[in-house]
Length: 246
Image (cartoon, rainbow, N blue to C red; front, side, top):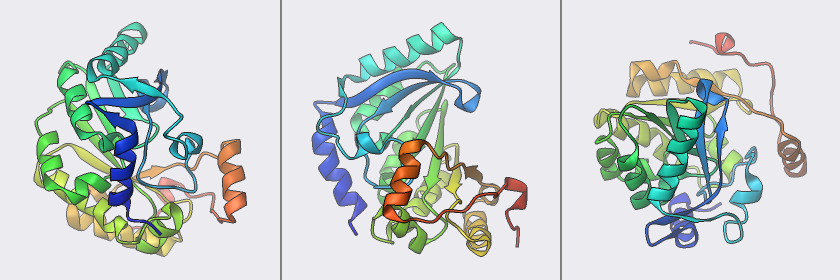
C-alpha cells in the first residue's frame, strides 16, 4: 500500500515543471455528448481497471510539457472546430499540477463549460483547493470514487484505505465551497449491500449525491488483460435502476 498524497508529490516532480504540465494527446471525444479533451500525464492512484495504465505507469517517458496557454489554446481550438461547448482534462489526474490547472481554468471563456474529472484526493486533503476552484462559474467537478468503501478502494487502487475518506472529503469540501460537483462510482467490483451503504453516505453529504453516476467498466483488451493478470474479479449486469435504494 502507498500514501496517495505522497505519490502525488512524487509524481508532481515528474509531470509539473515551471507551471507547465505533461500531456500525451489532445482530442475530441463523444463523452458528455461531445467534449474537447486534453489527456494529461501523472496520477496518484494505481487503479486495476485503468484504461490509461501505460501512461500512469510511465510518466517519465510519456507525453511532453505544455504551458497553460498552450493547453487551453488547444482545447478551445478543438471545441471551435467541432462546435463543442464542453472541455475537460482527463486521462490521468488533472489536480496534481495545481497552479497549471488554475491558470488553464482562467483562460477558458465563460461561455464554455469545463468538466474537471478527478479522484478528489488532493481536493479532499486541502480545503483551499476547493475554495480556489469556487472562483469559476463555468466549472463542473466530477469526483470519481474508486469503489464504495475503504476496503474496495484499497483493493482497486493499491493505496492505503484512508484514501477513500479523502474522496468523500473532497465532495464535502466542494459542497461547502458551493462548487458544482457530483460523484461517480465504479461499482463493477461491489456487492449490492456496499452500493446501498455508499448511497446513504453520499446522501448525508448532499441529498443530491445519493443519485450518483454509475461509472462503467469498459473492458478494453489491455484492461481485461490487466484484471486477469492481477486476478481481480468483477461483476457485470448492474444498471442504474437496479442499484438498491435501501
